[in-house]
Every structure is written in structure tokens, then in C-alpha cells.
Image (cartoon, rainbow, N blue to C red; front, side, top):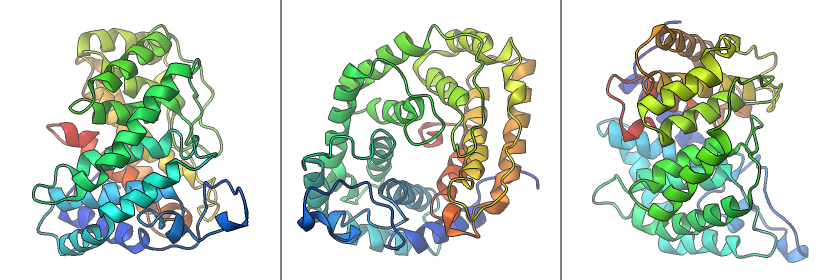
Length: 339
């Protein structure tokens, strides 16, 4: 298929998908440590906002999808339903319960770092909806996760480079975007940590994709570096990391053998997240023959995955978010929304 623009038709499709699952409590996979019988409670009691979408982090970024679409396409038929649902969800009382969960014993690693990063992204998007209280309501939760990032990076000696939820570079890309206008200390910490850990890297030789990955370890690092460096410095780094040795040519769309298997279905997400990273990186490097190759690869990956964002709940509860990221990154004039 040809790669479509992000238009009202696609936006409405994404909105309907996310509306169908952010309030669907079951099936549900909890990231929850039981300290006693009293802790065996249903998701809606533990997380009165983010109890849907199979797991906490998918519900968070399902909400990011909904609010992003509502802001960019305010005349969609789904926009009113999104606003009504947000009004009932993003309340101080419900945020207080979500915040209290973080203070439980054994909750220090809850959703680290993937869910942390998506909550910051959701908060950033919620703040863009003028006249609504959603961003203000989420302020305490966002600040709590920002502080957790600062503490975490102070002791994280080595990056986690797997292509799943524990990936450090992906989380820091979203955290960096949020911190730009909100938290100078976190911004500095992320940039210094990134330069120290990833700045010296050359000639990427990682073995990917893994059989259940939805992120490219190599492209996740490159995308983060593109955010913390100016174009000239990033271009020279990227050439040494992926272009000069031809490593980028190994990024061909992944084959998905069974979309009802939640882990194997991750590979549709890999194709979408690669498309997002490739498009964003292509717009950051200086014009050269490699730039066009990145754009072609991005289109190939996006075309391979877009037909499969609906069909089985294993992918349907989260893939639209990554499709939206990829389509936003391909817009002619990228801005904050491309993050």
C-alpha cells in the first residue's frame, strides 16, 4: 500500500480504536506486587484512570493517541466523546489514587521506564488543550515520574538496549521532549547521560530484530541522539554509527507470523516504530544520498504494518499509537507534535 497522510479518515480510525479499549478492563496484565491478600484488587480500583487497554502503559499512550487526535482534528465526530471521557477520567481524585499507588512498598520499579515516559508524553499533550483542566490534573503524576527519572539516571550505569519496554533510549526520547519546556534539571540530566553513554558509540553491530521486539535498539539510540544534538553534530555521529558501515541496510520490514500471539505481534509495532525513527532522523541529518534511503525504508516499514493495526486485541490495544507517531513524523513541517 502507498503511505497515506495523516488525514481525518485515519485520525477517526485511530480514535475509534483507542476509544474502544481505554475503558476495557479485561483482559488485563498487571504490573503489581502483592504484599498481602488485601492487595488482590481489580485494575479499576488500583488504577481508576489507566485500567483499560490490557495494561497500564498501553492505556496511558492510548490516551495520548486520543488527545493528540482531538487537538489536531477538533471537528471529528469522535472529538466530543474523547473530551467527555477525559473530563470524567482526569480528575484530581482519580489522579490522587494513581499517585498513591507509586508510594506503595515495592512500587519503585512500577512501569520503569516505558510507562514513566508515556505518562510524561500524555501530560505534555494534555497541557496543549486550552480551556481544559486535564493537564493541571495530571501535573502531580507527571512531576512524580520526572523525579523518578532523575533518581534512576543517577544510578543507571549501563543502558538497557533491548527492543521492548525496558529500552532506555526510547524512554529518554519522550522524557527529553517533555522536559524541554518544563524541567531544566531533567533536561540537563538526560542530555548529559545520553552524551556520556551513547555519544562515543560507533559502527552499530546489534543483532536485530529479536523475535518479540517492538523497538529497534539501534534506531532508538539514534533517535535520542538526534534530539540532544544539533543537526551538524548529529549527522557526523549518525554516519559513524549506522551509515558508514552499511548497518542501516539491515533494516528491512519484519515478518509477523502470528498476530494473535501478543509477543510476536510486537513485530508490527517494530515496523511502525522504525518508520517513526527513520522519518524523524531523515529530517534531522544534512541532505545526502543516505537521507533518501532512510525515507524509503520508513515508507516500506509503514506500508508493511498499517494494514494490521486492527484485527486482534493482541495488537489492537496499542498499535495505533505507533502508527500515529510514524505518520506525524512524516509531515512536511515537523514540530513538537512529531514527538
